[in-house]
Image (tube, rainbow, N blue to C red; front, top):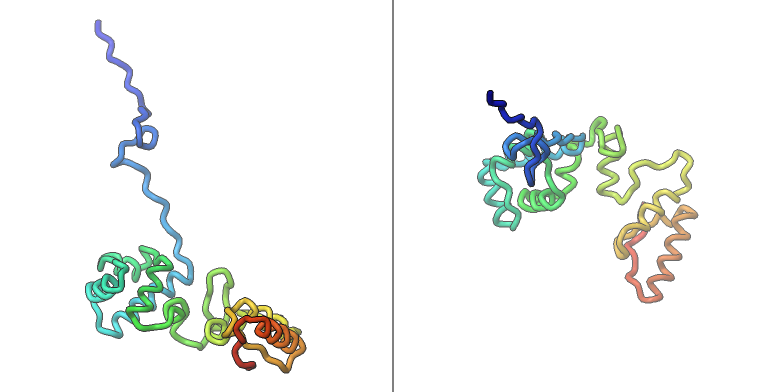
Length: 191
C-alpha cells in the first residue's frame, strides 16, 4: 500500500510571501485620496480640457519638461486612482502654465473648501493663505503676532510686516537690524 506524500499548505518560497507565488500576492492597500488629492485631480482635468489637450498631448508636454507621465496615468490621476507626487505637481503646473496653487486649491473664492490637515475653511481664506503671506487662521484677539510669526518663516527679501501693529513694528525693526548686518532687506511693509 502506497501512502501519498503530505502536501504542505504553506510552502515558503524564496522572495515571495509565505505560501504565495509571485502572481498570487495580496493586493496592495488602496491609497486614500484626501480632499487635496481630489481637488488636484479635478483641477488637472479642468485645466487640461480648457486647453483642449488630450491626455496624450499633456503627456508629451510633461515629457518635454523632463517628467514623464503616461497618458493612462494622467487618466488615473484625473479619476483619483493614482496620486500625484510633488515633482509631478510642479511639472504639471509648469506645463499648464499655472501657479501650483491653481492645482491645489478650488477654482473659486466662494464658499467653503476642505484642506488636508486643516479641515473646512473658506475658499477665500485658503487663497489668502497662498497669495497674501497670511496664516490660514488667526486668533480673534490677535495683536498681529500670528501674521508676523507666519511671515518670519518666509525667505528674506519677500517678508512683509504691518508696521502699525506692535508685533509688526518689532519684527520690522529686528529685520532692519539683520539687513544692516549684511542680510538682504525685507520687502516693503504692507497690511
